[in-house]
Length: 198
Ligand SMILES: N[C@@H](CCC(=O)N[C@@H](CS)C(=O)NCC(=O)O)C(=O)O
Image (cartoon, rainbow, N blue to C red):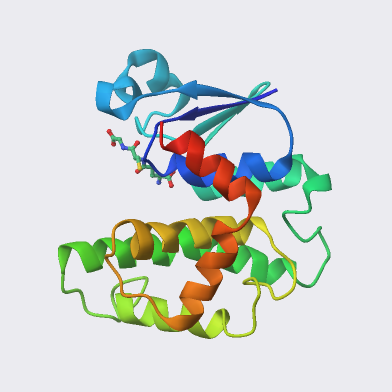
């Protein structure tokens, strides 16, 4: 059974939502950030970064939220959280899955810290550019790949929910509101919210 190391009110929310979407049983190991459990020597063997989330599945140990999304989507193909190998939608799926940590995360941090970085040097361009691109990508909907919900929506939707709804670091836009409402209406999202509230 997969084992998720998580802490309430953290990025582990994304992986709770992901695992809830699979419908598979999994074990949750509370790794309370407030108590410093993520820096304990036993946990550093699981994720040397000393951060949650992390996942164990038999002999496989994996950290980094988006990597866990990709791993679980392939591990549980019946959940249909990723277009299969060879499917032309897989390119865009990977693009948006990587966009979450590669562009959305630093854009949020920039909005929070108000750091000025030349847009040509910053890998994410700018906060405005990231959210403009997302607005365009979500124009058709209902999901980032169109009709099919995928793990990319979990990574993207969770990051946007964090930035827009939970911490109000970035102003919302009408199609973000509609997208986040759709994410929040998913029973798996709601179950993850209940768990993540601690
Ligand atoms: N790049 C990591 C970031 C994980 C991360 O930043 N986790 C935070 C919680 S939201 C954490 O564990 N912070 C505790 C610490 O650094 O001591 C991922 O995407 O999973």
